[in-house]
Image (cartoon, rainbow, N blue to C red; front, side, top):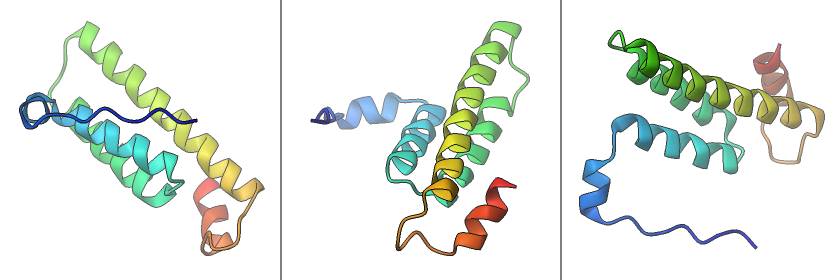
Length: 99
């Protein structure tokens, strides 16, 4: 049984970093197998995390986050190509995204 997400108060939501909000949206897109949206969110996350030259420690953290997101999207794309489901859209488009 999947865990029920905790409701976030308005104050907590305002205090979240933009990168945290984009990461949460990316995770949701991956959970829903929305490859195109997840890819767009990953590009946005990369812009936000690397827009200012971070310190060496923060840069390593940012690169770790980006690496894990890229790995998740990679596996999601390959699973979609290897196991296409009815209604997944254009199969050739999915194949082109993986190549």
